[in-house]
Amino acid sequence: MNTDIEPVLIGESPVMRRLLNAAKVVAATDVNVLLLGESGSGKETLARALHCWSPRASGSFLRLHCAGLDEAPDLPAICEHGQADGTLFLDEVAELTPRGQAGLLRCLEQLEGGRNGPALRVIAATAQDLGVLVEEGRFRRDLYHRLCVVPLELPPLRERLSDIPLLLDHFITGAAHEHGLPAPQLRAGAVRLLKRYAWPGNLRELRNICERLVILLPDGVVTPSNLPAEIRAAEAPEGMGLDGALGFRLPPNGIDLAQLEGEVIRQALTMAEGNKSRAARLLGLSRDTFLYRLRKHLAEA
Image 1 (cartoon, rainbow, N blue to C red):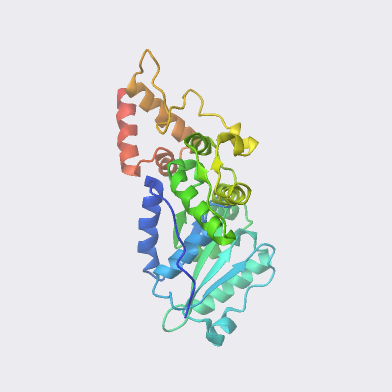
Image 2 (spheres, rainbow, N blue to C red):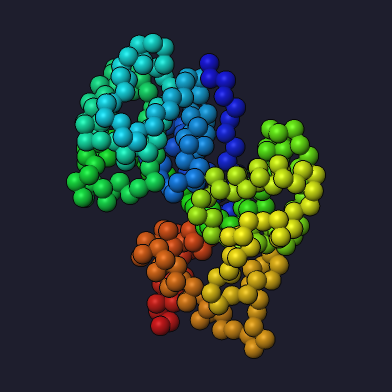
């Protein structure tokens, strides 16, 4: 029996709601899943959640770090020793050596050949674009297609900044409990700065900062001056002024809202390198809503 506590996935932003809805649908199936996302974005947490939400929740969750791995795991032996009907999490699967890729493919073929379905459900994760690696000849195409039955992409923290207050409360409360210390209180100015920062280290970086604040300022008050220099130096997006929780200050002479929306849509497409789904996530829109607004602005151009 798996006694792990169910992982907590925090987020009320549109992009996180869509991801969690999709993840719960996928968890109920037995297909292999490929988790995509930047380092520190929460891929292992999502993998554990998929396991806990699945019919295999009573089985084991096995984690294998693939960086530099030259030999595939002995999956049949794992199953024979009571680990069957669980989940195998392959972390950083793009880092497998060519020999490791070949060995893993053989193991997966053996597991999927069972009469009663696969003995282990495989969830792989990578911060790299496996499709590009396949085209470059650095990752096996046949292995890619076995792993990527359903892809799920975790958004970087900078694309879900509205979740920052919830995440702060979660990480600070957890760190205070872990260290037996009273939690500090964050002033509104400190929270605004944290919502302006780009978070290159994603959730891992935010969690570390929350733990640091708990240790250094137990039961204290966190002001902007208590935050790291890189966060205090964070700038607002070009052309926008910050104003409280809204994040935008209307210029005294007003704006052309339709023109602004069209410009924001074009910028999102540029940042997403033409990927309409990613551009929609940057704007907190569904793909259908984004495509509707894009067509509207193209027609008006």
